Length: 147
Image 1 (cartoon, rainbow, N blue to C red):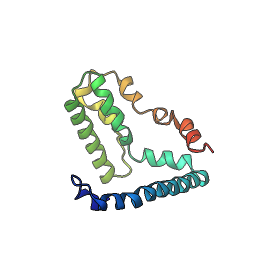
Image 2: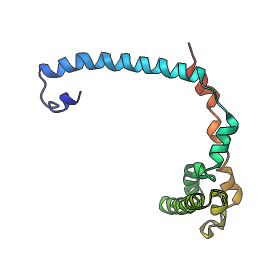
Image 3: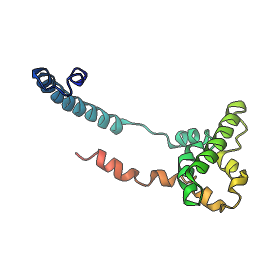
């Protein structure tokens, strides 16, 4: 298909010959990949306690996107929200790198940020709820394993 880019504005026989081979290959490769993925998911072994431990090692940084989306709803501009999240996340990340045993945590850093002193702490704590990210898990697996 990269060969066809050079001829984008000029249609000739070289376009159609490439497309005749590429499109069937794309679909058969995609079919192969989906079957392989389905088999991988069927045989996947999951250790929830290990997954939770790995997530907790981030000091709550995995929730930064949710916080970034919530702050504008609480009256902050997008620029302010980004600065608050980025600065606090960088501080927590640095702390985690320097002292792996000391984990102030992203939530605590946000709660201590003077720019967020008027924000209801419950609103920030709600961003750190794993259930939000898992709410559609059953539906996704049902879709994947339809046979």
